[in-house]
Image 1 (cartoon, one colour):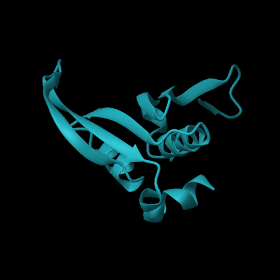
Image 2 (spheres, rainbow, N blue to C red):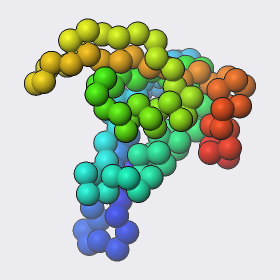
Image 3 (cartoon, rainbow, N blue to C red):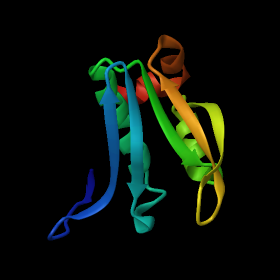
Image 4 (spheres, one colour):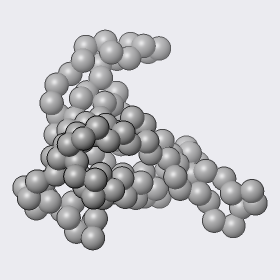
Length: 119
């Protein structure tokens, strides 16, 4: 969880929910307060979570994202996530495809820059 400094009581700026399941894990939710978006909070939460999942011995992390969520897709792509498949009309209100993505904790994914961000 990310909190805004200097606020009393502290206000949540964003959070990420990871579920480790042995050698696999799932990112269930990543959310940042709209007023705080574009400040690197989502990236910091994701990088921290990826580091923790690696420490737990996770080999692959999965997530699902709306096909129209271009900022999220750019973030995930920049950290080495790849598209596995599309779930047609997965989301509703509005109807939209869901994209299932995965991050592999391997030397090849780290060579794309993830290792530098996690250290």
